[in-house]
Amino acid sequence: MTRIFAAADIGSNTAHLLVAETDGSLVMRIDNYNEWIPLGETVAKEGIVPKEQIVQIAAAIKEFKRVCKDTQVLSLYVFATEGLRMARNHEQVIKRVANETGIKVEIISARKEAELSLAGVLLDTRNIRPELLFEVGGGSAQIGVVEKRAFSHEESLPLGTGRIIAESGIKFPCSDLALRAAETYIDDTLKRSTIEGSYKVAVVSGGVARGLWRALHPDAEKELARAEIEYMAWAACRLSVDRIMTRFGVKSKRAGTLLPGALIYRALMERFGLDRVVVSEFGIREGAILKLASGEITGCPV
Image 1 (tube, rainbow, N blue to C red):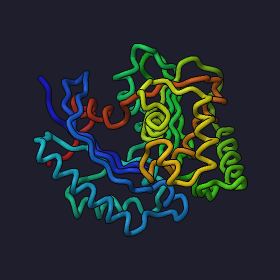
Image 2: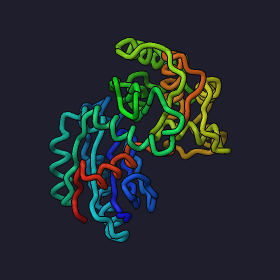
Image 3: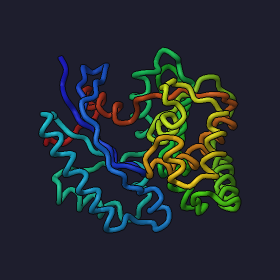
């Protein structure tokens, strides 16, 4: 028997809703809705979620509720990741959203974030037996070593596209000074990683990875080569946002993440000896849908 659930994450780049039907092992998407809210960059600069973004978050969740009611969703699970985790006023944000929408937002740990992502990623990569999982967002990067469909080691590093922009002052076209600042920040942060060694099969997930994939692979081939990531970093550095949009067929907000995203993924691939990575079309929201179906997490009625 299948049931309909909804999961929404307040991420560091977007607030994103997934409505899906599931039998507990497969996930069939019914509706996707997202709004660009760049918490990662804003919180990295200011330390708090400003009033205008709190209003955006509440409005997005109200719309999520409306969509869920229209599709007869059994329950809605809303969670937040690094953007809200690192905000000094996150409790104020959650309280206001609950008062205005009736929905409780759970700020999940980096560990839970990685576990939900892995549950989703394995929907379309289980047969390739991934050894590593990368998920780069606006505020952080999750890195996990996968053994027998679970993590043997995982970590979260402050390597998100919004954080890189805030730390380096990237603008488009990108100056040599800003590029060096971004590369230095990434290299210094990766030195703190406790995961070492070379791996053969890595899977990438999340909006930043899929943005790079769609920009570079209109044919939908699911592997991204390191040379392609290097090309993206080279090209996006030299172009205006308008030209990035035209050349790679992306929207303006996504265009601004291609350079910092490519820099982060290039550094990750170099560190772990990877010539290519596999892109998963699934991730954290699909993982949350599976956990809702199993009863491991509980959502709110709509």
